[in-house]
Amino acid sequence: MSGGPGVGDVAPGGASTRAIVSGGSGEGKSTTVCNLGTIWAAAGQKVLIVDADMRRPMQHQLFEVNNRAGLGNYLRKEKALDEVIHPTTSQNLSLIPGGSAPHDTVSLLNSDQMTRLIEEVGHRFDIILFDCPPILGVSDASIVTNLTDAAIIVTQHRRFPRSMLARVKKTVLNAGGNLLGVVLNNVDVRHDQHYQYYTSYYHYYSGPKSGGERAAQKPAPARLAAKVKSGVTDEY
Image (cartoon, rainbow, N blue to C red; front, side, top):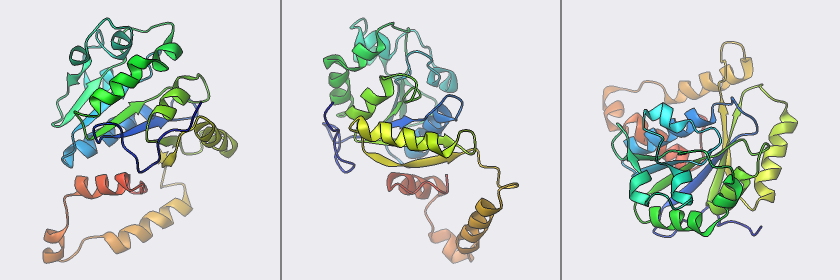
């Protein structure tokens, strides 16, 4: 499999495409995708979330969208693209749910129809986020990682050994993907002294300012979206 586009590259049409992956299930990946999409949309970006986990889709539940017409239906050429793009209650944020579960997910993701989808939505949206299955479980996520500009790994704090995270990184790179960064999820700052020290240090310098300085700051969603877009995700 050939290498994917560089981190600075974009999909046809100018959109930035991101594959969100994890090593195992239950690490909060789908919730992270939902939150990232909402933050970017609140910052004024036109965002599309694609639920590429057609085996166990979750995004339609998070956004309360019907799952009868989704990615699987489009890739099997049962539905047109406009029929599988659903609006959400968040302004600037749309969703392609997983749709009906196909048995040949690998061949569908590795098809000309999938490439066509990325090209077409690249002309309509600024940011496209793919919610992928666990990358160590099936080949689906490796295929999507290769097709997108960059990958973001979501890992739950202390859920799996560090060696598993190293395997996830290696799998992303071996698939031809570009690793943008890691989201450390579900950190308990009450029991992790090192992380608590870091967050206290951070808030000491970024805490409440005087009235004039506070008024000059960007709204929180815009600041956070800018950090995420540049690869800095510690605040998240």
